[in-house]
Amino acid sequence: MPTDSLATNVKPVEKKPYFDAHYLAPDMVQLQASPLLIDTGQKRILVDTGLTSGTDWAARAGRLTKTLGAAGIAADSISMVVLTHCHPDHIGGLVADPAKQFPSADLILSEAELAIWNSPDAASKLPKWAAEFVPMVQR
Image: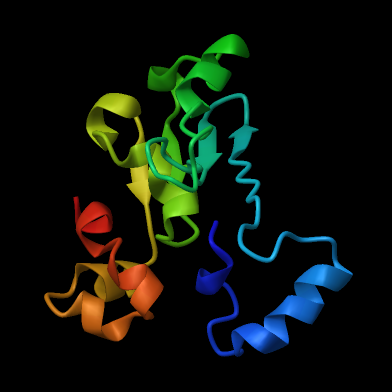
């Protein structure tokens, strides 16, 4: 992820010492998105869906369905997908077609989060870096 989308309230000259002290590349930070699967024995609940592939900062993402399959978990056995919030690294696994990706799952999202992203003027209510994702989230 480009570092200009992190700590947007801090000047770049102030960020560099922090990134250097923590051994982070000043121009790119590697994100780790780890969706959580909860199996209650009666329900399988997926918390977040990670990143989607195909973006310049997520070239190796988009492996959720494949990873679940490798663990012997079919996508249609997921009964609920809970989204903590709608940033791309949390909903990316749903962007193609949620109904097809997890056809048996109820999608759970807070009313506040839904209202923010689903409003007609969503882009004006969000930081500049997040506004570009509005069409993806609304799909």
